[in-house]
Amino acid sequence: MKQVRQWQRICILSLLTVSVFAPIVLVSHRLKALTSTGRREFIEDLSTIKFRTDGLKLNAIQQEDGKDLREPKLVIYKDKEFNSVDSVNTSSENLDSNLPRSYEDLNVSVIKSVSEIYLEEKEKSEKSQQKTILRSDEKEQYSQRSVQPDQNKRSPLHTDDKIKEMKDQLIRAKAYVNFAPPGSNAHLVKELRTRIKELERAAGVASRDSDLSRSVLQKIKSMEVSLSKASQIFDDCPAMATKLRAMTYNAEEQPEERQLPNQQKLHDPSLYHYAVFSDNVLACAVVINSTVTFATEPEKIVFHVVTDSLNLPAISMWFLVNPPGKATIQIESTDSFDWLSSKYNATLKKQNSHDVRFNSALNHLRFYLPDVFPELDKIVLFDHDVVVQRDLSRLWSINMKGKVNAAVETCQEGEASFRRMDMFINFSDTLVPKKFDAKACTWAFGMNLFDLQVWRRRNLTSVYHKYLQLGYKRPLWKAGSLPLGWVTFYNQTVALNKRWHLLGLGYDSGVGRGDIERAAVIHYDGVMKPWLDIGIAKYKGYWSKHVDYHNPYLLQCNIHE
Image (tube, rainbow, N blue to C red; front, top):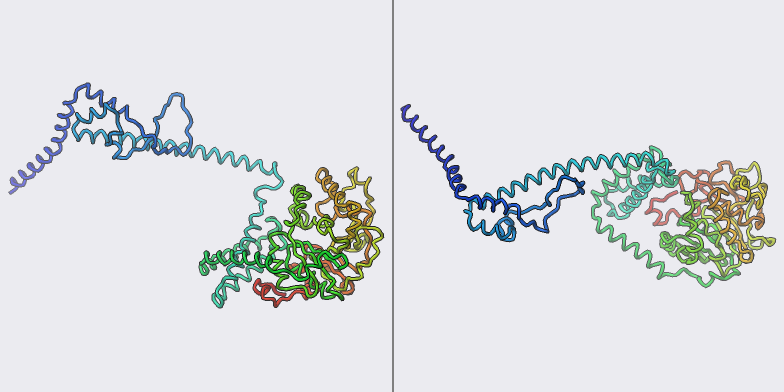
């Protein structure tokens, strides 16, 4: 039995041996059939392959040239391309006709193997070089970053990305709140409203990232979490985008189609004309509402509101829905003043200040009043952070004594509103003492009566332009419109009784209640505006009583007292 098994093993091993060596012998026999000439032709054929001009180039990074190295052009071939007649020249066709089919397969395999090995080595070389280049780029970038603070005052770390992120979050959150189906996800809607209020409070006092505290940064993260929840629940973005576009289109169309009443009064010089330059809907509404409320002849009042193109639809729609009683109102955009871009916008770009109070076109538009209102003789200019508490008709009968500007003075030492010329103007410059007296009394913007006829005769807008340009060439005064107003209307201002205009409610918590109630106009000058949470609480009531917090738009925007 054992012998039988041994013979079986021997037979199996013999068959395996034959199956292994037989192909080798067969191939060797066929190779011998090739002549030396045939071998040379085969080798020459390999070197004369036509490379396709449309081959895929893998060089992602340009390689350095070498003096002693010439790399072949990189081409990838498909299997079928090597069997096509177009892949080889005439000598290859002769060889293919003489060679057995099995050797043709061997030819393809050899070329494929060489190509694959070349590509693998090429890829390794490119990866190695790419890492070297990246390391070099990183070093260069690091070197540039290390030099950056010396070249610019504000380094990349001081960008305002967080401020932009906050504004974007507020827009998204309000969109989710407005488009939430009625009665659905009440808890999330309430959460979003809370987040909106928190961020708006922070956004109201911050103009750059450096103004943001750690608590504000945490609120930004919390808002992002809430927005992430909302995106999972209200995920119909195309419908939301379509509705937003439709609302924007309707808002722009409706102000064009619907006209504010009494537009024939806009250029009547016998009426009481008031102007407000602002991008704040609620602030404008309070100025106008308070003025009309205390007016004995509201039908003689004409309000001119000038805003930017972005806020024009919103402000127009507000006063279309909430007209100011018997008074007349006009809403305009700065874009409608074609002359403004040529006269002022080019110089505005030279301002170095990042504070919108100083570089805003709306803030400097006050120096172009004769151009804005060419048919008027007099006008009262309000800042948008004032509240009117008395009838102002007597203001129009004040004797201007041939001056251009009527304003309350701010040169009384000991008062919170005290300002000296040299606090804002550089009297160390040799030009300044020749033109101005450092002891000259200063005055305030906020409520000013301007005689536009005298202004035009004395061409004071050109005086403003002269000093504006001069201030770009040498540091003559601090940024802002106030020192420019002092030099433009120098010796052109008549003093008003202080009861006409009370200052300080936006920065001074010591203003007396009696002074406030006796004043015709109170002014929240300073950063603590009454519509912000940081506003001085005991002064807010004088402003908020002119806001209808039951208005459906204010309720929808989560604005409450």
